[in-house]
Image (cartoon, rainbow, N blue to C red):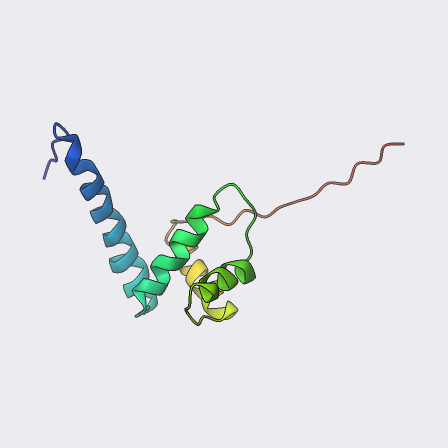
Length: 101
């Protein structure tokens, strides 16, 4: 089924459909996640911090401050599921110490 991009107003709806399909049909269903709203909150929190270091604890604190109860282990499990689905990629920060002598 080909999609026409002549009407640019449909593009956000189309992309939202793809995002929802991947998030719900792939990640949530495969991992048995029933709280999709919490999964979406984690996705939005991580996406809002693109380019900045963020920890699992910080994500947990941000979501708790919005009134939701969530454990660090739950955030870790959900992030692992998102990384397995290639929605996010974990970058390990390496700090090199240079001797200036």
